[in-house]
Image (spheres, rainbow, N blue to C red):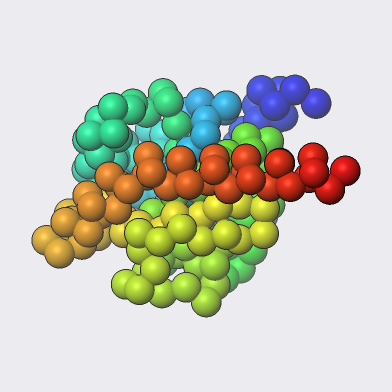
Length: 200
């Protein structure tokens, strides 16, 4: 199926989802948005108040910082895809509950399968642990991790960076690594392709 149709169908499913109680307290679902052919996707934890009000991911203060960091890479929002694991805002921005994560994970799994990005940049520990449960954000941020079919690059969440100067500096430094990380992935994929050709 065409990925545009598939992702539109997923948005429609998310819009009427009642798999967990978050749909009762949220204003809008926030399915994610951006370039469905992007090499890079950014995955956060859950929508905040501004996201809940608009139905769009990362449009509050953390989103503005994310956009500034993209500009530093000579990129814009339209060049990437941005989403969250959880599609409805948890009340008072509390941490998502295990049953909420379990209810929502099928959506992100299907979105990523359709987009098939070269790199997933996880924003914060919840997002990192979704892909890499044994990970520790203070240790693993800024390091490329191969998880099943994906390359994952954990960074601090922009919201946390706005509250902590050290995290802010680490986030900026990690972001500037992204072009070289993509290059590393391309080289690895090229090497694997050559090996397949030789072996066949």
